[in-house]
Image (cartoon, rainbow, N blue to C red; front, side):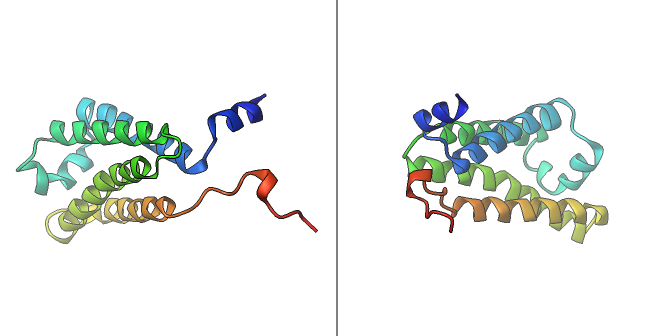
Length: 143
């Protein structure tokens, strides 16, 4: 049953990644930044929150996450999917940079967040360049 639905809708691991992480980004922005930001997050982002309110940054996560999730619904639209991957990488890269600057100056414990967000940004970039495996009928037979 599920296999038939997956074939009908053109299942793609790359698009599933966009949808899953995009929804996660939107929820992180809405629940974790707008609704209830943690102390370490707020303190680690002080280098940017002096110019941009934390609530606006939270809405950035919500909008870009939603954009990525919607891009994941686009079948056979590589340009739309590329926009989705950029929407995933942008806020994570921003977080990595701001936490790294904070770790280097006023908040040394932000180094862990800088490493995590930096690694995740690189992961998004790597996944964006991967191809989905070919459908079963086009795969080589096992020997």
